[in-house]
Length: 122
Image (cartoon, one colour):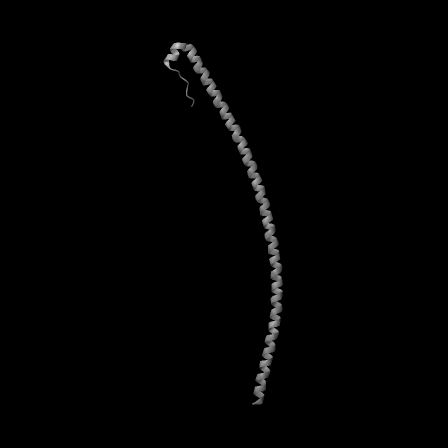
């Protein structure tokens, strides 16, 4: 709440009450005008700040969307590469199992022939 301007009694005595009251009213009007101008200026500055803040948030959201898209594409690409590597690994593992199975059957055949030879020889 604006505080009214008041002068000392000596001022009233020297200029007179009508002139001093008129000066008080003039100062109060100037003060009210300055307050309203300041309020209007603050509202304009806040509106500019809010617009700039909204713009920066929009730019940030766009940047984050772009980075998320790039990140998801990179993850998708790496997952596809990993799938291909896993397929290759599975094929290689199957081939190794086949080779290992052949060796195992071959060794069992050798052991079987040796055991049969020992059994027949007896």
